[in-house]
Image (tube, rainbow, N blue to C red; front, side):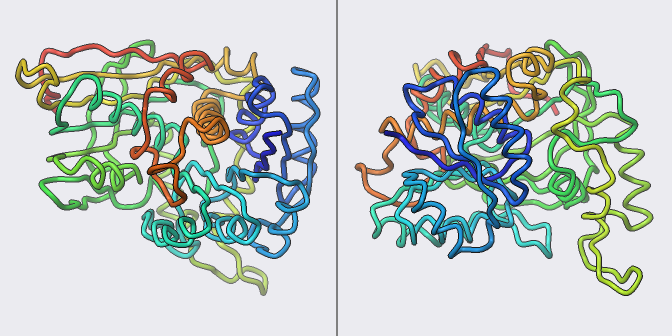
Length: 407
């Protein structure tokens, strides 16, 4: 029996649990927990109606380590899939160690009081997980996740070295809302408003948020403005591809999104420090999250496609000189909604979360020499993950470009 406990009940979790239920040969016993059990129950009802699979649901505070430890033990889960907020990564890792369960997530830890995305807090768990004989897999979403696997697949099959790497994340979907985020508004806005950072000649270079804009023509979407941002896979890729001279992350945003964000930032609604309101402290960004559309409700109205991938330049594996390859996935919002009841932004993260869990449960990924420890997705064999992408709704293509990117 492969018992798995999923923490979190947003759109990504919904996709992940639906796809787990569609693979009963791997996921034989699925448990779902969140602070709001009604959200878990709604996902379970959808899974039951679409697949016939029963999902057990629970209410849990992911920051309550003793309670979470008890829940892990009660379910008998050998793997905990963390699809909750990144603030909760460390408490969930603590509970996994206490309960003797393996751990997996899709985004690295960040403290609540500062928009700081770094892996060092989780890398510090290496010795404890190794000593316990447990595996922790970090960053098994799309970005981070698939984009990192794309890079390592290119390095295994096309390029001996990667000199330059650009990750391009385009969402060409239209949800019909004046302003809404396609994943957790609090996390999305913290990422977008944080200073941009990219890897250049052995160090990170910081620039103002949203200061560097380039137009790019995305297949299946068309020309879009993309902005250079910081994303956590740059940190792990720079570590595990040591020859990298430059690595950048780009994400597309429409003009209306930028205008709304600028206004919200100007009036203080994106602040993450507490302010007093009617005698109590509130966090403006958390209040904004409460009044914005819930991302999981956008699937029914979202039309269009996403296009996410890597452009990598380096020494060709066959010795033919320097080459550039573009590897990507194109995903349709309406097709995702038809299959799982969720839009493509949730789908493109939820499916890789399921695949990462499958890699661990089937033993395809065991870490170094089958030992325990904390592993980023870049450290593991990309081939079985890439193969499963093709069979689980995220097919990919790769093409050789005429030369390195000009931007």
